[in-house]
Image (cartoon, rainbow, N blue to C red; front, side, top):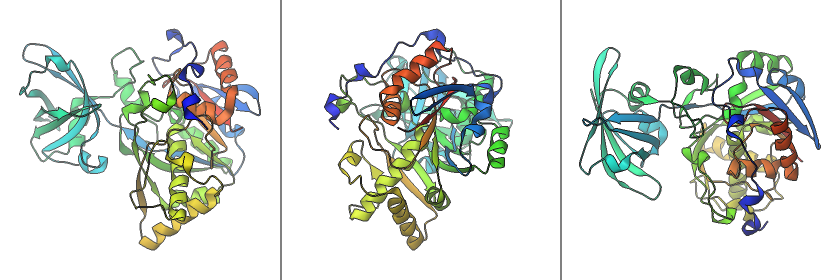
Length: 402
């Protein structure tokens, strides 16, 4: 693979605004489902997904929960400044969300020019019927973000409680409206548990309790990982070649039970690009472990895997990680990945992916093109011509790997 030859102009298409789903369907599993396999396309409803999957298959889902990461502060003059929390600065997500009194985060700022040096922004609210004051202090700037220190009183509250009260659900930038009450529920998966994402794993938005019951009846297994989706998932590729694009890094955790499930599965199906990146990252981390190229940081850089040995089966790599965890008596592995999957990448674990329809020229579309080859154009043309809804609140697809 020569990444310099992967030009973004070859992975784009025209997406009219009216094809973007700006609001969710009333019922999650009423969305359309495009099924692609061996060059053929069929159309169905998402509620029929279990009928499209082989008995005994294993689904890997991302159980992350979206936090209310967008906070609006009103200045005494009436001007509004928006702070979008991206990720904690110098701490893990789990620790930062449980901080009391203060927390430091990397943020984007809307209206930054209106925020005078030294000025403290304040927001008043109620939590549990008691008044709470939240303050934002400008602490500096790094390459792609501002460093903001939040402080609040009473100080015995956890930051996650403050976010629930002060923040809004961070809808994607292509949804041109403010967050509404329905988004608090619909911009979360029905099984969301582990708080820490600023964007939802959209492929799983279509699942309902009825879906899971149908999967159980067909002996289709479900296992979970947790990848905290960052705002970088919406970051457009602005370079001519993908070689010059800087891929965002995201943290994920996986339990031993999920690793065992992958090893025992007859067919692995990734629900969403985040789940796919997680399990593929695990494979390559296992390869590094087997090769002795391992420093216990459990991290991957964006191009690193393209130089690793592709001949090692995932049963060996995942087995090596599982053995390492058992020897260390570790139940949950904490990792970071910047893996960038582009055409030419050799997939190791999933036979299929369930995913929505992605933005033109995005890293997510490149992943789809890597997974099913040049027929991604055929799939997207069919979706466009048959009134499929695109992006986060849009319809779904089941794509079988070429």
